[in-house]
Amino acid sequence: MSGLLALLDDVAAIAKVAAASVDDIAAAATKAGAKAAGVVIDDAAVTPKYVQGFSADRELPIIWRIALGSMKNKLVFLLPGLLALDHFAPALITPLLMLGGAYLCFEGAEKVFHALAPHSEAGVEQDFDTRDPAHLEEEKVAGAIKTDFILSAEIMTIALATIESPSFWMQAITLAVVGIFITVVVYGAVALIVKMDDVGLHLAATGRTSGGRALGRGLVLAMPKLMAFLSTVGTAAMLWVGGNIVIHGLEVTHLWAWPYATIHHIAELASAAAGTAQGAIEWVVTAALDGVFGLILGTLLIPVATRIIGPLIAAVSGKKSAAH
Image 1 (cartoon, rainbow, N blue to C red):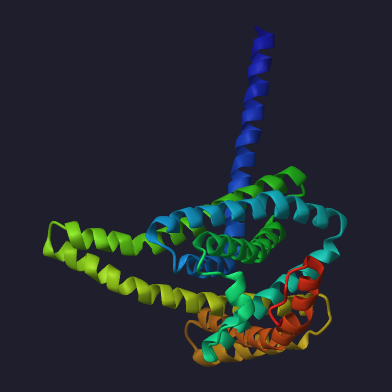
Image 2: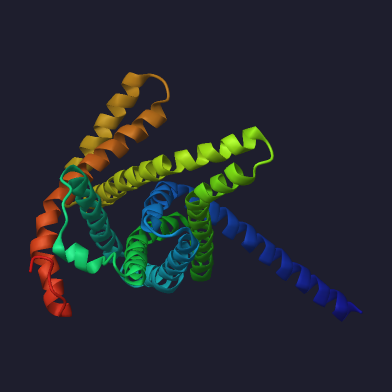
């Protein structure tokens, strides 16, 4: 009998430790998710543009494919890669993030450039062949997953830096929870956004009340404007997040602390002058200046990417460059 009681005590102790670990993981995951909120918003704002131009029946399958790619990015590549880098070569994490941030600046600046001076390019027409919807879908999904990889890397890195547990397995499980939770939230929200016009059409056609039908018509009319707004927000967020990553990296690596110190100083002055909502004002000014830095950096990178890096990649891959 004493042996059974001792066994029950051991089981109770194990259960108590397991419950405490679950609580610790949940708390750490919540904290990490909150820290990465800005990048999560960027991810949610960027993704809807990748389903624009497709038929309604392809929207959810495309989002599902991108979501699976995002999950693979986080759990298969980034989670073990970041844990390995954190353990063996932590100094490499910041430079790699800066490369990703520079890519976001380039992509955002390129979108601004095309918006201000719209034109077609033979290479783009060839790569995104609108005459072949299946090929176009493959290219769009691949592009979305590539952009997601950079945003996911920032999310997972922020999460890793937030986790205070020295346990390797606690870090790994918490990162996995963060990755899964954020992917579900982001792509669940994206699915709701892109299908809202279909909901509006259904309400407009089958609504039992005039108010319901009017709501449906309002949704149908509002969704193109919302999608255009999200596309603009996504571009701005690319510049903001990319600029922030590069500026923070320059300061952390002591390569060039002036941008970070100057932006921080200006934001503090603006928040002090505002008197009220100082935290919000400081955040807005910081994000805006990060975005300006990102736009300048991205603009400088456009000729480098299109005239040097692009042709080099084309030469290595055997694919014709857009310049040809």
